Image (cartoon, rainbow, N blue to C red; front, side):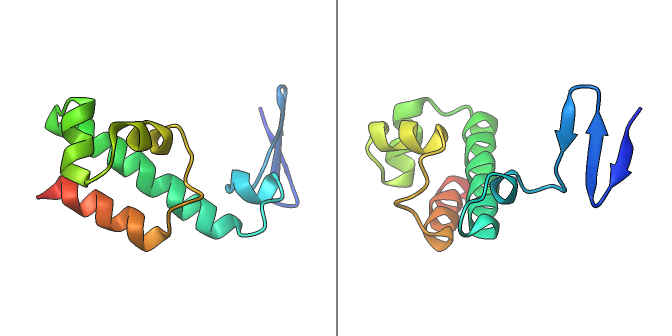
Length: 93
């Protein structure tokens, strides 16, 4: 059972924020961080859906395998939202 208060939900395990973990953690641009995170999730799903091996997915996206690994682990700082969308589109072809 949860109780709502000021956009937060209190549960037995703690308080759940209003939907953007990056805002909850105090990131300076939480909306951009959330957008990047959602695109990376789409990238991961596209790789899985196409059944691509990690190295093949990296080549398809034009990234070194090491950079793809870092990206899929959440290291999005070097990327803009537009760049991530471009990488995702390369998997959609």
